Length: 461
Image (cartoon, rainbow, N blue to C red; front, side, top):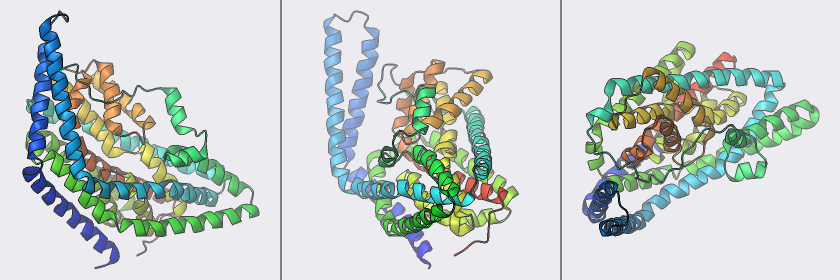
């Protein structure tokens, strides 16, 4: 077994062992806390329902119900804290790994992109590659959104599941993301390179790197020293990535144990229809992307997907496509993509080409509307699709970004934001599929742009 296959095997093994241990903990050690949380949620919903019926807020019953609600909220908070504390040894494993990955990502993007752009040379070539890249990103994003729109209208999971609706005044704890041009520009244009590096603002790092790379190429001979230096640094960081990836199975084990211990398998039965239909949609998106990749890359697309086993498993288990970034970059270069294309397309993809997240956004938004019995016309659904297309581009790096975008979008269509409470519990399970799909989408995008540029060489082991 080769080194790469050995790591993939251990990641897959950690996934299974983590799920089994998580289930054992859920049934034997966490059932008390989980039952208390269910009881608290029932009390909160009951209190909210009764509070909504009372018109006069000065009556004694209103004050009593508020006290009951506060007690239930306190019960939920205490049990969540105890559960988190007991799971800390497992969550620490994944937290340490993700922190190590984030330590690598910013310098890796900067060094590889500067070298890549400097090797491309003139700004016209950068613009040409950028144009082809954005053409693919916009097309893939629209494909994902439209597929989600079609599937949610066919499956109608919101009507089929018959879930009890949350009260309209439920606080989801999410900030709405209204699309603002000012915020979007602020998110793209860096005011400080060090701040962008410190906060892992990939898009801002990309902008600075483009300027730096073009300027390095423009000064000729003097710039060659800088290119060689950054090329060496990039290879050193990739070596560091190899060391960090050895911790991946432990991180996967910890993340999987924690999520199953908290959610249990009961959540799968309750949301079986939604989860099944969503993952069916993801599988269809994979097949469509691979089919389009086959048209351009021919049989090599299957070799590409095979090489992405490990990054996809890491992204799936940790629910973070960022965790798979260094390994994805390395596998794409081994596949035959030139470093100047990989280092340019891949970082942009993490902000503009989140195919899995796109499909989820239309799927989830219309699921909530269906759950509340709100009918949206075809024109309204297309408008929602376009709004999601725009707002999703400005929030890369925001925690629970997909839910934040959905919260801001559904408000524009008078769909209760409280409906997100239906999804918050299972969002980590769905995020795993979204992250894995994002890796596949960005990998195929990079390979296709390389092919279009005539820069796709033979694969290397």
